Amino acid sequence: MSLGTGKHILVVDDDDMMRAFVKELLEINDFKITEASNGKAGLKKFKENTPDLVITDIIMPEMEGISFIRELRSHNKAIPIIAMTGNVHGRMEEFLDISSQLGADDILRKPIKAQEFLDAINKLI
Image (cartoon, rainbow, N blue to C red):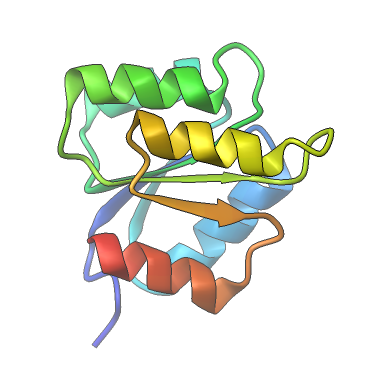
């Protein structure tokens, strides 16, 4: 039996290669994926078709992940959210801590290992 069984995940990340990696990993595990390249686009897609889980990067143009998480929580307190980021100017832990305080259910550090990523998703779905 496949892991995702058709569950819908919104992936928000400005890095095209990261989104492609996440999309491929999740689709081969039977998840349905919607992509967005920043928080503003992600919020629009979230409102159009509410997913079962949201995965968001923190550092993005237009609307970064912290504002995106805050907006999501104002619309939906129950949606599971995974926040992820790399080490930007040595502030990775600070960004992940803020994300967690604002309502991210799990936080991941880039680079992400495939199994760690799938484990985090399956814990929340």
